[in-house]
Image (cartoon, rainbow, N blue to C red; front, side):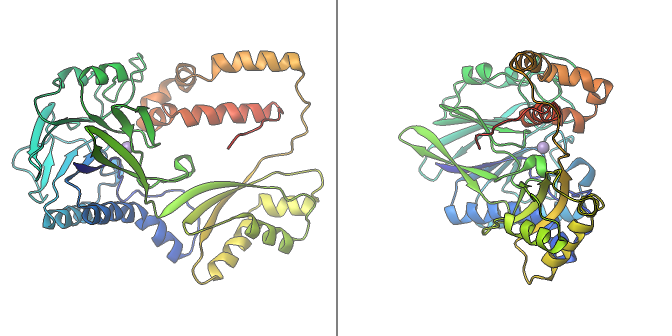
Length: 401
Ligand SMILES: [Mn+2]
């Protein structure tokens, strides 16, 4: 058995907030969520997989465009022509009442209803596969859905599809079909195909309980490589392998300009700092302002002139490999260093403050908005806040990237 596990396609994401860029670059960015899924379909056909699982959020809530839907139908049609079934559940972004007589989708697409249900298929080698899942009928599902999943059936393989988030045991937060890994494992399934969290994560190894992440990151918090999982049976177990396919990678690059003053040399330095490679990169440049810089240089950086000139240069290149969309200024670090005693208090306080429940409390009523609550459930966000607070306090930190 061989299948593809993906989720959170967020087709036609609007990529708001990206300032002026050449049409060529903009098109590339705008097409990226489509291109990512197209590549998944290409690979499904090339690898001759038995089926494809899509675990929710095919569309962005605010951007469920006709274009996105037409694109999705056409891609499923390509899979249909190769007799590859698609198992699909809707998530919190594309929640809908699933009815029998819908839909514009080709006949190889099997949509899970709003109640937990199990679909079974027989592979060409006569092995049977049960797949259990459900679709969101509304934006929030605060009730644990896993209790409605049956235990492993008599099928050779049993897979659970679950768009949801780990239970925080906090009614203010548990809006996305909250679950615990322990209750998933109790079902004795061979694989848990998760969706919802956009950062790739393995919650358990054997059997795999896996978030494949969003196939195409949409901003700097969804940085690094993105793709899907290819899952194959191997001596009675399912082995999964991550496949990077995102056409665009979001990165942040730190630049030390030292004593450089002339704008031309600064731009040259910025150009050289970025190692583009094969992958097209959207880059945020972090520049550390220092005492060595003169006032004019600082002004040209802060008022956006440097970024503009760098963008102009890059746009003039025939086929740019990267695009600087932002310059962040890290400010002058001339705060006093912490003493060892301060350090101890800081570590202790940080442990109590930079936890999810404290973040949610701080966000207060704002955490009722999905886009804020989503952020707050990302461990990377909390880590980022901790790091920034640390930086503010003037403490040097060492990373082990
Ligand atoms: Mn999503």
